[in-house]
Image: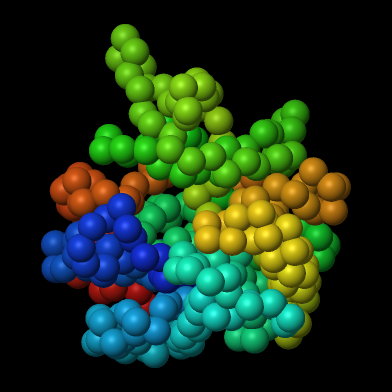
Length: 318
């Protein structure tokens, strides 16, 4: 079986979440966190290496939480674990951190933090998002096949199924080619709010209505590679980070972010890459705001009642 990695981006500050570290908030019947379900689903789908991208300042809490449970489980499943650290100071050669900058550089840099650890096809996910089992299976099975170096896969979610009842969210809104098999553009769109008109769910951003049936990126991407080789996309991403400093950081030194959907969208518009949509029927949910937590807790409880998961989460892995 081809080796496949899932990279979990867990370095977000979580400013909208308030106090505490939202990636470590318990949501399961036995204090499982969302990442527990992500790790379970990744292992079940066939991924055999997990990389956590975190920040140094949460390392102690993170290692305590993961080290007490997940690492032992992964060892039994012959799944490797590795850690990478996203640092504000990790900028391209010849550049420095702008004075007064405290904001992290974004999801693109989070992936680059693990560049030296990736030597196989890999997927990228957010730590605080629940994607459902189907997304992991579809991405893994796609990665297990051979693809051109300029191919990417994306788990496609429907916008109306990814909104919060408690405030605006950021999504990569996609433009889909005829036939709905590939996307031709993705635009990172912030502060998308849920609307309800005559019982129908809608969405808008900055007062502009969005199609609630649109595909959106939830930062679940798949990047192919030849056996034993680093994915070609990593070099492209690294070059893009330099261009980001030359342009975006120069214009907005304190707040510019290097985001995966923005970078991939640029590659699509330039005709340099293709992105395959792997549609998933599973409903996304996650903790963006403190108020989201209770609905997430109830959602996992319902999944257990429906037999999607065992009450002892990892007990069905063999």
